[in-house]
Length: 231
Image 1 (cartoon, rainbow, N blue to C red):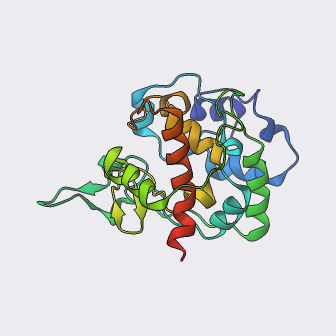
Image 2 (cartoon, rainbow, N blue to C red):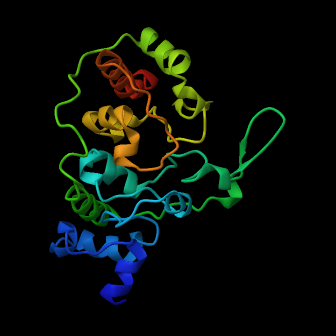
């Protein structure tokens, strides 16, 4: 496939992508197997139509988002992070009580061998996106009362309407968050919660205009969710 065709698929050029110039074989896997669903360079234009039609999350800032050990493990044994897929309205069936995910419309993610998973993880971690996308050092690392955090998450800010805080409990339109502490970098959680539109334009997650103490509290709670669920 010619470079120009690849650029059209991604809606952007490859010139600024460090991973595609690297010798790491993971870059070849990204180009051959991943770009049909994921953008690995920043698209030229962000639009609501593009958000509705994309098949998987953008990965051009993966190195500022994910924890590498999680990537290596997940690429070998992928499990669904968004219960209803990338765009939930395409994969839910309405019912009298609640939306039900139509499993027949969801395609399983491919699995990679360990060596390939490690190479792809290295390539993804090289993609950090714009320098100002994630505020480095924003999360101060303070422990949070899980009972107070749960009240904030479930009731005061309504996060559970879209996100699962534990398996089977919470909404299905957003990614589950009970593995977020293992999956995501703390500063990414903080920055995305503070202003999701700055990272993912037109995303349906609202900007909550949280005060700094509340941002720290919510970030800390999300990070601690995984450890709490594992007990």
